[in-house]
Each structure stands twice: as C-alpha cells, then as structure tokens.
Amino acid sequence: MWRKSCLIFLSLLTLWLAGCSQAVPLSQQEVVFADSFVAGEMGDWVLEADSWGRAAVDQEKLLIEINQSDTMQYSALAGQTFTDFALEVDAEIIAGHAESSYGVLFRMMDAARFYRFEITGTGLYMVERRNADGSWTRLLDDWQESAAIQQGVGALNRLKVVAAGSGFALYVNGALILQFTDTAYPAGTVALDAGTFGVSGLQVAFDNVVIR
Image 1 (cartoon, rainbow, N blue to C red):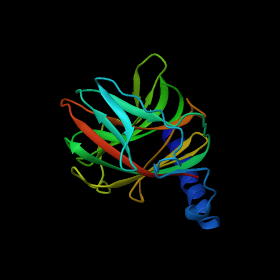
Image 2: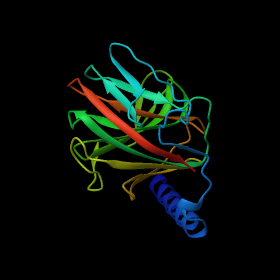
Image 3: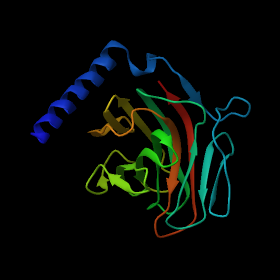
C-alpha cells in the first residue's frame, strides 16, 4: 500500500512539475532571491570562522573551507523563510579531495532541524534529514551514483531543489535524480554546505544562487 501510494504521489509531483514548466517556464517564474556574491549587493549570509573551518566571500563566490576530517560547515541565509520554492546554485570543489561532499540545506527550521542534499566529487548523492535530537535520517538507503554529476576537483555542478508541500525533487545539471516525500519540516531557511569524511582540507565555492 505504501509503495502504491508513494508511486501515485511521485507521478502527481512529476505532472505538477511538468505542468509548472509548461505553464510558466522556470526562467520566467518570479525570482524572490538571487545572489552572485558581489560586494554591496549580497544577501545576509551567516559567515563564521574558527579553527575547524570558515565561510567567507572571496572573488565574488561564497567559499566554505574545512580544516578537519569528518566535519560539516555551512552558511545560512538569515532572515528569510521559504515554503514552496525552486532553488538553484552553482558549486564546485576547488581544493581538497573529490570524496568530499557539498550541497544545499533546505526547510531549515533551526541549526538542528533541516534537510540536506549532498553530492560528492566522485559522482555520488544523498539526501537526509537532521533531527532535533542530533540524529540523521537517510531518505535513501545509501549514497547513490548519478551520471549527471560532473566529477573531480574543479568540476562545476548546478544543483536544484524543488519543494512543493511534502514533495521534493532534486536535480543536478538539469537532470532529475530523485523525488521523495517527507512531512517533518514544512518551511525554513536555506543554507549552502560542505563536508569532509576521513580526510581534512577542503574548499568549495558557490555562486549564482537563484530562488523562485
């Protein structure tokens, strides 16, 4: 019964996304936020630094650096809450190991509750939910491969998250790679993040954020 209901929902979500695309192309939908990280024109991103890592703006890009292994660092967009939206951003590893990850946090209720969409420089992706008790719930059984992900240090990928109620669609470089449903978090802010696994030393650059 769950599988049947889920398949029905995903089909409806696909039709909804297609309908939106046909009625109003994404490029013509209302832009509610955009950022190219130009000095004096930036959004209110939280930029913090310590011995573990930092988030900073350098050469008109949002740069996240991590100096420790098994560490996650993010920069949140302060003061703005989104419910249903489509977010796109360019991202690339510019230094470090390709096994590291980077991506988008969304429907971020606070520092402990959010969804996380990540890809790695080796062509894998994952989506998970951070819970209030500090635990993680994976919304996939394990990291999955996608041919849509450009691999390696210096490879640019454009990520997109579409949220519509409890339905979500995730894209890389224009290719739909996953649809899923979850009802835990109905709204929240967004953030850009990066993470290391068994090795330290990572720099990830983000640019051209658009939220419709």
